[in-house]
Length: 120
Image (cartoon, rainbow, N blue to C red):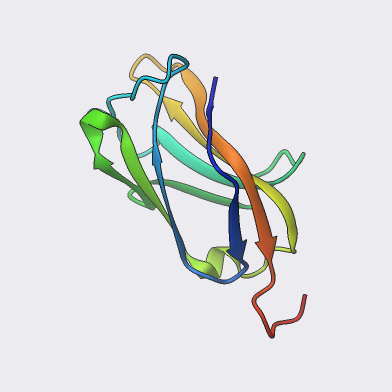
């Protein structure tokens, strides 16, 4: 079961950093000490879509800030969101543990809006 996070609003084309904490279904922090490049994947997708519009992994947007307490930061480059249409999206973090078990551990809604002064 994923931890639901507060709704996020972002402007298409704007750099944004999202901070979070990986937690299990008991709301206990997941120790990220041994997680490698592909074991944490953050995705942004249009609500109901099957493909991610933006994806970040460890070393490519995702940084583990305090491994033992499960905290991480996702730096989303404005170039990756510049082409997004305004509307409702979802963000979610997928964790794959060392045994290969995959789970959505963090999710929330995102509202994308065109930058002021740009074409919608």
